[in-house]
Length: 429
Ligand code: SDX
Image 1 (cartoon, protein in one colour):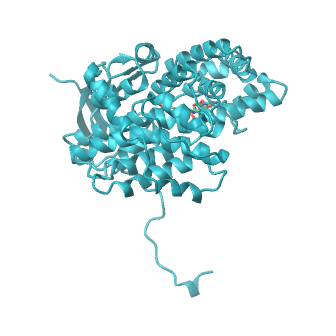
Image 2 (cartoon, rainbow, N blue to C red):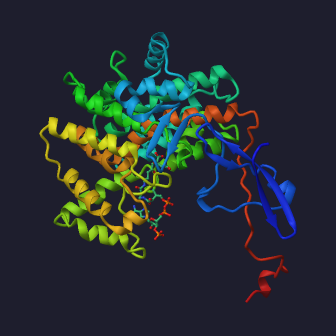
Image 3 (cartoon, rainbow, N blue to C red):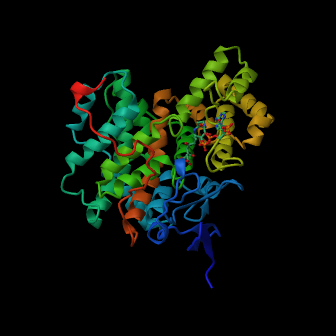
């Protein structure tokens, strides 16, 4: 007999089925709640509400577990590059050698932008934030591919997926070149995904460019760590917009906009700004930990805390280790890394953070690596978007494959004025 949940309201009782996932997570299926009881649920920020069933990523916030399609993030970081993880997330299985080579070759064929897209960059101010450029240009891509926007046409979907994966690094690198007034650098298809991005970011037409292999390795690891994270704010946004049958470019542009928020993907930029503020304030870490504990102060330790992880964020551990390795290889003493380590030590020994289970998250150390590679701070969240793109795509595809797919349209509880008489303007006070 399947387990159920009984809800008693006054003299009424409603019995609701329980749904159990493959990892033993249990959920009350309230699909029939309103039709059976007239009731709806309330849950600001969806802290307790599952929006869907998903087979893409599993998180265990208590045990610090993160798996993509069943593979632990630590294993994928140690054995794959980012393109292979893109394939896994989007198609559900690790590719064979031939599948992977075909996937890489196809992405290589789509790295260039239509030459007219380059005109857009002339219109942006030189200090335009690259996330604003990214969201605008990605949405505009839909106007260049009007023949392949149907979310229900597998051929349209496949070519759009490859175009987005291939072109996001080009769009991102162009926005950096725009900000420094240098010529845009075309992609070079014989280079790997991350090597190609670095050359578009840092090469100049007047001399050859070779990427530092340590930077290529660190970038692959960072993009893999950011590739998916189940129903986070930006992924839920992509699914929400996608549920209306909007084209994939429009949905990803919406996800980019959500990610821009400093409470979400924008946190990596905010972390470095915070660490620089502490450095310039004679490294007084305790002062800022105390500020973060003052609920009325409005200051938060950026890069700390997480809605799901109530233990360590496994990505933070992987990124911190890579940070340490890269800085020592480069013989760099980055004061921001040292301040970050002090901040972590002080916070993790402070009751305020321990009681609230606030640990460093994925954004806490990533910026230190980006700085070591030479990525400017405003580009940090752009790299988060490049990493998260396969996750957004995988969830968008999964949402369309649902047999019971419906447009997202949450209910609410109205708290405004009840009906009242209209007063003509000449009779108002
Ligand atoms: C990402 O969802 C995802 O998976 C996101 C992400 C992904 O991969 O997609 O993991 C990426 O967005 C990581 C998070 C990056 N954001 C930051 O680092 C910004 C700083 N962190 C917070 O603002 C906060 O921790 C959130 C937004 C991450 C989580 O917010 P919640 O779950 O709504 O928690 P909350 O704001 O209700 O905080 C609970 C308590 C509060 O104190 P009390 O009201 O109980 O007294 O913890 C406090 C908060 O004031 N708190 C912090 C804090 N984070 C939470 N206090 C100080 N510093 C912080 N960073």
